[in-house]
Length: 343
Image 1 (cartoon, rainbow, N blue to C red):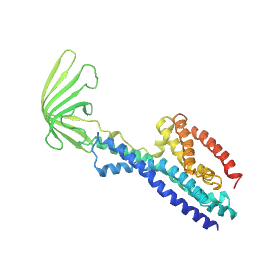
Image 2 (cartoon, rainbow, N blue to C red):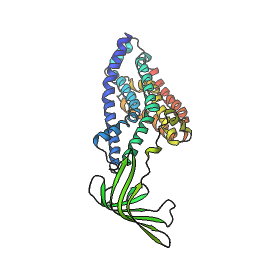
Image 3 (cartoon, rainbow, N blue to C red):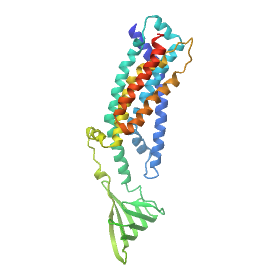
């Protein structure tokens, strides 16, 4: 009977989990694509490149959606069985709440391990690939220069081009830089033609037939040239993946890394802590109660994640030691009043 009961419960759980997960995953994916689309105002991406960049967001999306979906689906499953009077039959056969939760215990442990792997191992690598891709596109010759548009930058230079004759060739170019030392000194460059040269991610601007005006507080100098190369500092040379351990070891000094670590551990811990909560708010007495399982699941999820998020901003991992016991205490109070005395 035990194996049949477990299969029966998991079958109903799957019927609730996958549609709910698909909906949440789709919504999160749409939000991710909207965020990626804002990058197209700065860098050029085709659909294939945007999809590859979206794949680096998938570990974060799973980290957010899987725990919430697991808790909500389990709560809804128990509620549906309660109001279909199926749990009444199961309890009449001497089944206990622990037996109902047993198949989900193994499932929650596997899900917690998966979330830890996604958050602690896959996510840092995905963030590195994402950053490297964006830097590579920023260093691409096709992205930065648009004819007749003000406010463009090429490294430390302000840049304006009159027209574009080819994919990487331009005419009527104007460059201005305040120089390394700043102050009143600056360089003003006028050139008839120019092109962008990209060699292994090292970007440079080759300009020809122009003049350089060097401005000072009391004088202006002019230099005519036939060809000049202007280099742009490359982000790729300074980008190096140091590994997972090196990434997380910075949690003591880096507030962002500390927040990510706290969130990853909170999400992984939640799928285990939510087991008694799912039974508490999913199992109902159909004669005296209304089905508010979805509302309870939403409230309890917010009651866990909101304090964990805000306390994690300042307290890091210590926040979990505060939020988790208090949340379990609230669940235990409701469990005693709703389940222990009745079932």
